[in-house]
Image (tube, rainbow, N blue to C red; front, side, top):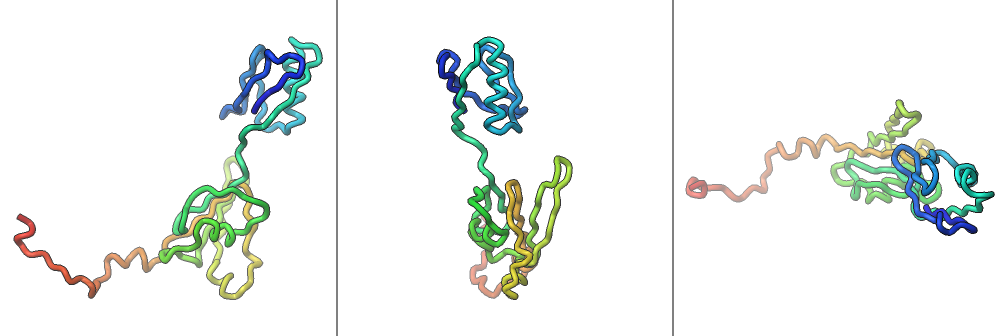
Length: 177
């Protein structure tokens, strides 16, 4: 974020919130800001700079921030991290992530949701049944930080061990020498 000092441009600076939640400021000590709203941040900066400036007028311009997102992994077309744009459900999130693949187990989709620093809740959803019955009452709304995991179906796990009739090429002993 950019800090702009209206009457003291020599203190203008660009700062980044560190992983520990602090920002390093020019001329004053580090300040913890990770859980502050924008008005709280401005008040905290005015307090910090009020020790060396008389009634500092500070503007904060957000440059980049972590947008609310969810992660889709497992047997989806395009696993990855996706931005939440408004309200979105699990099935909409799967569609955004490229939909199910031929190896997907539609009946055991897992929604992981962090409920505290130490606890994560996991809900198993039968998306196959929801879509077949056209009853989306269990199609939960995604929240920032959620993870959708689509497991691999049993058939795709064992298919490589099944005999195939399409093998037409045989190796002769000469090919090994």
